[in-house]
Length: 206
Image (cartoon, rainbow, N blue to C red; front, side, top):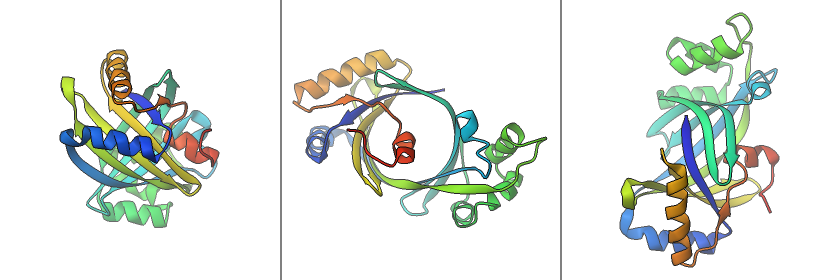
């Protein structure tokens, strides 16, 4: 179970202000390309699951993830997540020709799981690519041992900004983050939808 605090920033100005405040804690920045997949008959989405392939910094790394049963309440996200690294060349091949995902079960534990859990009698037909979005993620080693992720997410229909923190104590982390944002005069609100949900809605939240 992945548990994260998700706080939404209203605009680029708030994002820049927070980026400046966190600059002394900066560890690295990743350019992420996220692509999402479903079975041709909606086998995953009908059961509130999603398959994602993420490329880091071009093709330096590729991770395939299966997420399910996502809940986002009061700025705290909980989702069942399983992921593994795969060869970026395989990821690109699957992005270009999604039917190759079925063949990837020979080398990918997650794809074997997808076919076994969401297929019919352990088999699954074709896959489809739903599209995706790009994300610029700055990572910070913050106080209290927390790692913060500051996101600039670029959809075809606009850009959103968000601060995330994966933690085993979300209520405490949220309290610390809210206090920090208020001290630095940075406006925020609780995220009301995941990036994937925003992508599927095709519009930014008001």
